Length: 93
View: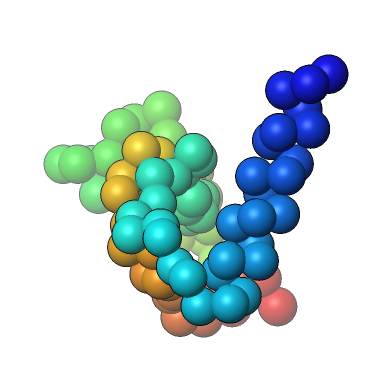
C-alpha cells in the first residue's frame, strides 16, 4: 500500500510542476501504438496478400486489414509533440 501512495503523490507533484511551468520532461516513450485499419482500393496482386482480398461495397476488389500507423510503441517523442492527421473517410459518414 505504501508504494501506491508514492505513485499518486508523484503524479500530483508532476502535474503541479507542469502547471507552474517547470517542465522537467524532455521526451516521452509511448506505451502503445496508435493507428487505423484501412481498406486499400484497388487490390494490387503484386503487393497485397491474396487472403486479404475482399470486395468494396462499390464492387471494386480491395485489400482489407491494412494498418496506417501514426505513432509506434516505444517511439520517443518530444514532450510537447503532437501526432495529428487529417483524413476524410467517406465510408465513415
